[in-house]
Image 1 (tube, rainbow, N blue to C red):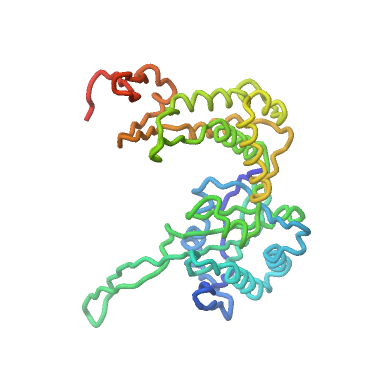
Image 2 (cartoon, one colour):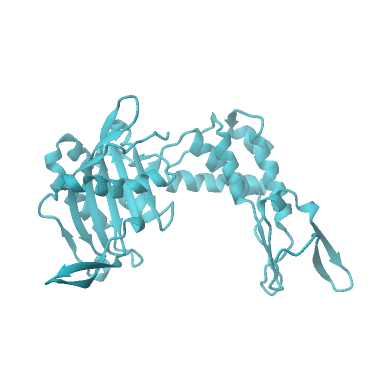
Length: 363
């Protein structure tokens, strides 16, 4: 379920700031001693910076998830305290920073600056306005220059700070659907499925709707019917499965969605995943998705055609040969390879070959 969220009238009511280190490197946690209030003149700029990632990124709706009860979910409790009484922003914001610190002990997790903001005036449409908690983490600082007047002359100053265009991780939790774990949007530029940020710290799972389920099932279908790359006796990658052959198999599997409005898991396995190997790979990925990401693949759901189309981006378009040659196919070639490519085997040289037809060299 993806909401149409507008931030046109959003303002920041207060900020809790923190510097979050990595405990395994004996780096400390430092948190605000008081709420930072944003000056009226700075509201448009700062609220724009905080809300920008949630406008420009394609985000799936998430909600808090706990194996036993939401009442045992630390972050859900912290957020609930703030929505219940905004006077709890400082204490709950520091608790959020403490939770992030406790989850940051892996050696690969970088230290960074954390902002926890109470945001007012988020529009959900149909005259519904809600509050939100925005959590942003920046793991890098950027140098910048400024020229200022000093004693009748000009001087150049060098400083380091957060680049608004390079905020690494973020989450916006809306005061909406409280009983189901609050509706939230999240991103991590290090990877859309970052286990540390999404699962360990936030403890959220995608909200399964027709869009998400259609996209994930289609992606898993492509993966299930795509054979693993084979290798020769010396460990080199083999050209036994060229992209066009693999894509034909994947397109055949995705054709299940062409004339259907309703998905049936049993029917899909029978019609799209025809080999025992493909069915086994699909079920293995389905189990991983449900256990690790909390996305349960329903027995039936409405099919979202546009999200099935996105799975076609997984089609192979590069063929790597053991002779050091790579052949990259553009989309129109991937969809109709026989028009320009011909594969065969040379008995004399005992090697496979690919013949390429073209009109002229565009280099």
